[in-house]
Length: 176
Length: 176
Image (tube, rainbow over all chains, first blue to last red; front, side, top):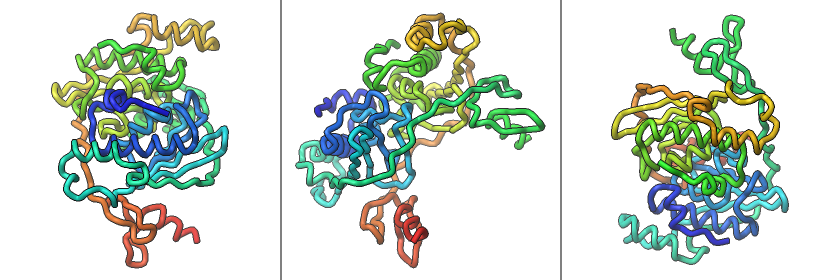
């Protein structure tokens, strides 16, 4: 697949080495899975950090925070795992920094250019993985918080003095 | 500001009532703050759910999961708070479902159309809020996990038998 890097910059807001890393990681993983942008949840991503590159992952793969096919594990690692529900094929992609020329680290523009133009094998490592299929997203009932009157998902309520309230209302009570 | 809903659909993957809700909530909040898409972190968003609408928030506001200006509170509420670092102005926007005609709930296409075309005051409520300015994102050092050899953010390591390891390696050890 082909995604214009300029369109990705418009989404993220700016270009940077981190975005370039995410671009190469995601494109490599998508090609490995022969996948295109997910319309619903046919692709799932597990991301192990919340750095700039994850915006490339969201934009290119369609595994987005709002769609239920995006799982965040706060491991601080430049690693994504993508899984295709149709083919049941998964891939783990890791950023490989060992080939970066030492003199370009501090020049963010040159560094981003190097990341975008180097051979895929110099930037990322890919490995097919077998993972347990993640649960699809579910739509939950909505109830009214008996304290503030706002709507809240039924699975995110707390009981307080015999009332069903939202988490912020339950925490305000505990603070006061 | 003006954002084409079709471009947003391309990012999210499909149109749905949830996306339309997020579109109206975000557009209303951005207009209230006289803000445009964030290039870096001049805007910050606190979102209280991870439903479809949050993709509209990311796409329109530039407060994205990968950029450090996106804070998730898992409250299950259709509420976003946007804060402009330049003006120090904040707004809390809430989805108002009470005006939705009862007969259109089950027709997702008609429902989305109603959400996109109704008066703003029929869809959302806005309130200026004063919040503590969120910390900007920080770049952390990277170290090598002494078990798997992969890179990991220094603040996401664990000590295990005298070695500094990443969280997945520390958990594998505990399981075996």
